[in-house]
Length: 342
Image 1 (tube, one colour):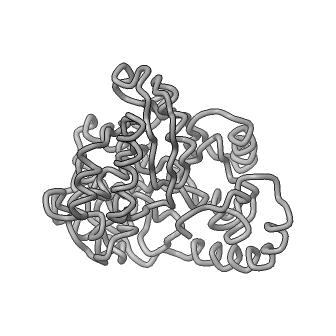
Image 2 (tube, rainbow, N blue to C red):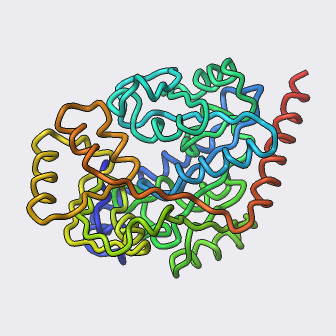
Image 3 (cartoon, one colour):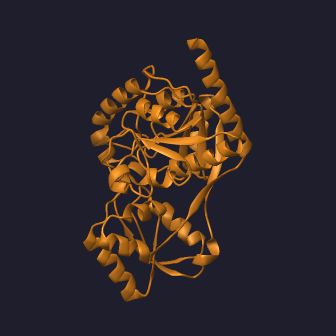
């Protein structure tokens, strides 16, 4: 599903109850699949950044923040992505000068600005290609529920504001499988932000003896947005998070236009957004994901991209040292795994 239904993140009601039988079947088979033994291993350590639910939780900014720490530790990171939303199945090394979101998806285009990135529907083959690029630590962006490639460490990202939604599995709720089977495969949980939903996740982690790390998403260059009247448009899983970040930096949101996650903007939509902003004398504000999706997508898409200002954000770990320790553990586990194969 490209857009999360609102009832997924509210108290369970008629819609969730009506879909619960399908949810039970989906959750059962999803859990069985993810609990299978991995069929392939790599030489390089594999650090997976995943989430428990469908939709945005903050995986991509987390993966980028992890890569920066990997570099500080003297290693060369590389990203492995399925390339959701793109037409290429891979394995393919992402080239930001040639590929478009139509080719490889929007998130890989962002990741490729920070480290070597490979998209591949076949994760083991993608990992092989990354190793050929000289990468010595693989960061999987998503793929937590996919058992095809062995993971040495799995960091599960949870948006504290959304938590696990209504707790039901797809299609009655946002969960990709029931909570306990997923937590059993996680090495640790990263909680982004603070809220009651996040507190509930912490309780579950405590019962499962899973460590909980903390982080926040912070906008960059806040002064440039102060008192700026904007038309905020985006095609992401959680538009409210984008709107809240704009307000945080002092922007004055006069109009909001939200589309489905990974939405490919049509020429007519681009013209309408630009015309609406011009008629109201508003600055067009969007996310980095939407901005890269407009790149080389067509004449009107390029015009909208040029007319838009991107709200840049970064993930900040509360205690980066804990991530360093997790990465060291990842490397040690990979070394032990390789030793047993000799």
